[in-house]
Length: 185
Image: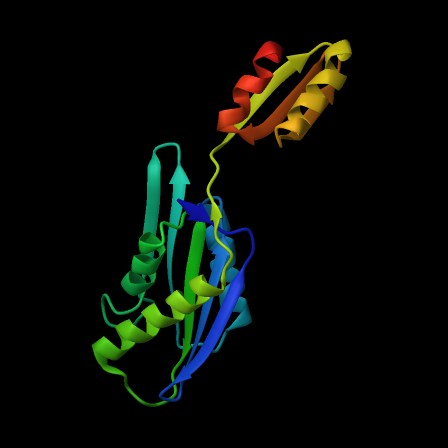
């Protein structure tokens, strides 16, 4: 499985209609909704803003797609098929269409939405997905320096920290690197 770390955009004109393909990283459905709202605000006069997303969660992969008023199956599904075909997760792909006055037909729409998605994916730098784990850790003050060194060595990050009688941390790191911290758990 693969993911991306930044947003990418592709644009083309096809039979006077303007198609803008966007792919953006999203960790959860709230991030997807925020990106969709952002695209709606950037393109308030667009005729259609179709999308698809795939998210990896603890309970499996969640996906959705939407035709945004285009004939059923001509926009969201071709976008989704490219995400699925490239095994992309934690991404949303959006295709914005400004209608140019020439009808493309259902086959033409399917090809246009799919092509815009394919092109924006080809622009993107794909990274192998690394499963991350969030851990809550309680340490004595004398353990903190060694813990912090070990965490950085495996590429982990401290998300939250609370210094009271003991140090309480919330850390995020690759699931495969949890064993490196086992002496602290």
